[in-house]
Length: 130
Image (tube, rainbow, N blue to C red; front, side, top):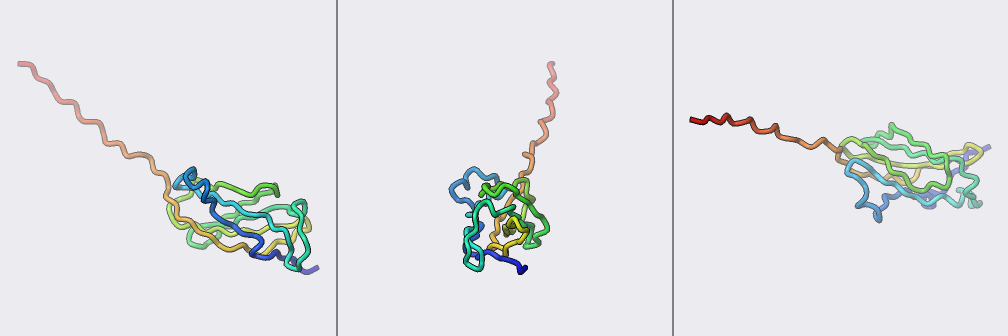
């Protein structure tokens, strides 16, 4: 059986701009539309999608993988990211275990949350009463 791939344009991974204000500086919110068609043109139902795989990492390393096993999920927040430019790409896996080609790669620069810098309290002044 040959590997079935999904059209790249039918499976897009984008940053959710509508909720950008709610995303911390050290996080990325990704949203996508489920693929509806296979590369050969046949339809693909939501129940035929077993999982989504998000590959991501700093500077296009893609050394991290997040697996989503609920095919109805179309958005995820990945948080606690270190400072740097993170790249994300995604695939879908059907119920026969066939993995799609990669979506387009998207990137986001994040800034890790750092604890606030608190200056040491001032030294008490000695008070002298004469």
